[in-house]
Length: 118
Image (cartoon, rainbow, N blue to C red; front, side):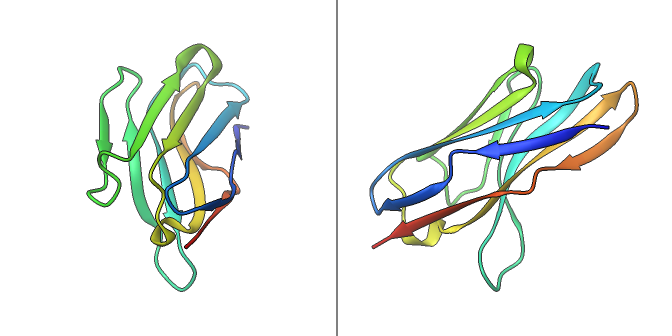
């Protein structure tokens, strides 16, 4: 069984920064796409950023130039550096890992709350 745990959320003023971490544990031989998603109150979950094991990244237009996703393959961990935060970035941020082997599956963390005050 694979488990994901996020950390690093909190309350920050507009213009501030936060760094989120997501660590995967369990039997993981090979990973696929990994990413961060967020869900604001009353809204659908949306993609924030994704990264492949080779380091290729993709960002939502709303966070380009402000957020940076990175990974540590040795630790099965991904990170999200969030700068120039805006009140509209307030949401529950969750990480997602696609595991390719030994057993393929798609896993979500419970999420970490990010609140940006104006």
